Image 1 (cartoon, one colour):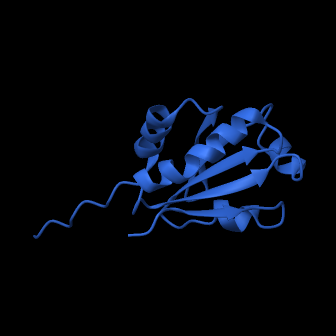
Image 2 (spheres, helix red, strand yellow):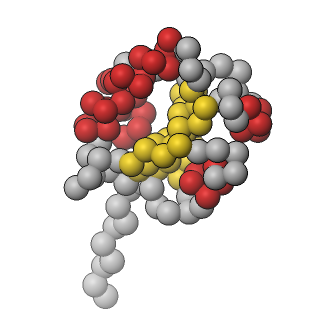
Length: 121
């Protein structure tokens, strides 16, 4: 299976990339150039995504400086901030990047669960 796909979102594309239902976790990475903690996460991202190979998820990156209206829309006060969505519903928020084990744990806790098999009646 493939690694989770990463997209760049703009104010115009955000709703279609993040809020449209598609039975996958959407991790929105609000970042900015020159942000040291954003750079730490960006360097770790390929390894993190390889750990999640085949997971029903996508990462959507938003430059918070270029798309300030989106940061304001979600009440963000600092970067990096990660918002978690499933089928258009906001599930949670992570501020900063606290390292691989923490990040992977939060993501795995929010991944959609496979539907239970139908029982034979």
